[in-house]
Image (cartoon, rainbow, N blue to C red; front, side, top):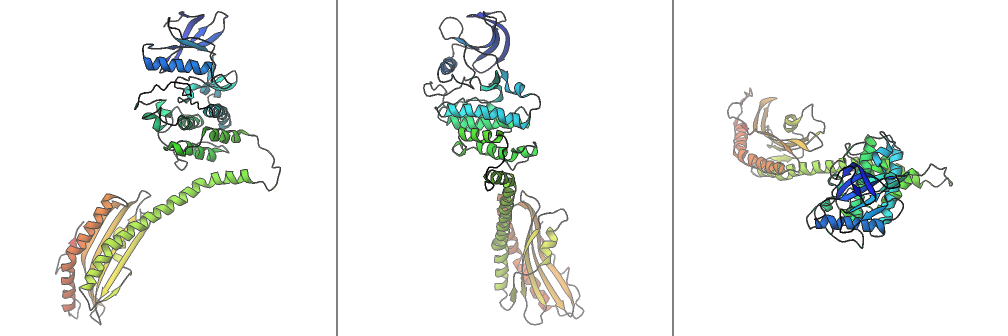
Length: 463
């Protein structure tokens, strides 16, 4: 098409844009009034033609209401191009201005979601909600481009497995079976993404769910706005992957409308419901962080329990069983594993378990067996250590012999961590004969001067 071309009583002036179904041009009628005309591209495409007919029939029927850009003229006949004309409107980004206040954005989206909620209650869904399709028409926030509209009388046209909607604003279920998905829930998802980009002042939303406890997503990190905590929670609920867990469009509209109501003096002193809701929203992030910290601490505790129960205790009791005259002490301090994992750069502390097997009487021989887990960061990156030492003391002098010193880097709750436990079990089992040999050597050594026996055997190191 070219400038100056005539469609019906409308002359094309300049191209304004192009969508999936057609081109949009500024046009001028015989009365000198400018408008916008949308012309179908590829009229031979059955699906495109069906969608264009659906859009026109919707705008001529149930779409005639405040908040929906109306149709002024159209041609659905078989002669020439298929088109329809609508009033010129201002895109929402231009209407809001270069740096809109959060109040203005919320006010606009409150009006738009009220329109979408009214449509949804009649079984109508837009399915293409994004900033490009939101407009200001003579001062009224309105919705345009119903090319993907779904309404009770409309024809289902999408092939199975073909995505439908604006990719960056699209609900995940619309990528597979859009005509089987709940269209209202999909619109709720797209509305939340649109609300976020307009408030954040960016062109495109982040992928996936917007979590209120994620500094990249949360608006409280970007805006100084009274209702930012509530907006974070609303957007999180609207962008959850499971469409059945999203609020309905009316709930979204009611929430946004509540944010634009003027502040009022409380009529009843005891009515604190609004304040309670605000406090709950503002403390939600802290509550989640507490829950996350508790859950993380539980994961660390479970990982340490596995290290103790699956590795240290079986080796400890196996060794004590082979030394029936020795006494046992557990749990007890075993300094060596903590010394292996302690580092000034670590900030999450270490967890240590130790056991001691002690020769009877004044033999002065003991065996120390211990494990340690030290977590280095919130992702669970950790250091694990295991030791087995034999000590002999005689008249304040003696020697200490390290049978096992094993240290490894891992991550709790990982396959590597589980594999590492098995490797530690194997290490304890393999050093058992050497441990018993060292015990026998210590008991036989009655040197008064306590000459060190280091070097009699080489420590078993498995780094």
